[in-house]
Length: 207
Image (cartoon, rainbow, N blue to C red; front, top):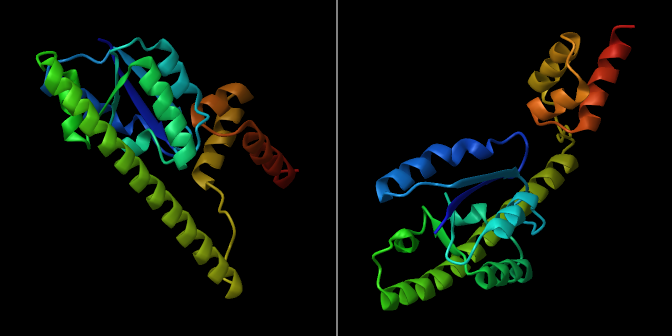
């Protein structure tokens, strides 16, 4: 049995590695070692996630996907979640999440066959429930955000998306230090077009 940790954050400004310590501490407390780490910055509301599917491609039957929380795996619509669940089920992969204590037995090799099958059934139901809750939370937050923006626009108080001035400053400093565009993009986790816009804006302001 190989145990792979999957960590995800929605945007490049968020730290997907934030959960690393919690997962390592959990593995140590349960007496097992994490063999693979898969990290990406993608929305949990979409099915198309390169690292998630690279991990699944590398998994063998009986392997484990270790998560900090179920919503790291899914905030997807029901149809997409069901598709992902079928893929995971067909691969014979087990899901263990720190916020789902009943799933912890999946990494316990001493669990007998009957108990193991019962726990898999229970966890399947709980996973579906937590995924549905995560989706609802996502939709509620998006709705509140949309309503807030609409009201702010009506009152003339919506400033639009604000620039990340600290990262823009870092772009300029790294470029002045002779860094290549590709290295700046990779190091700061910014889009290539954004980096170009920052540099062009700075050039206009200094000429």
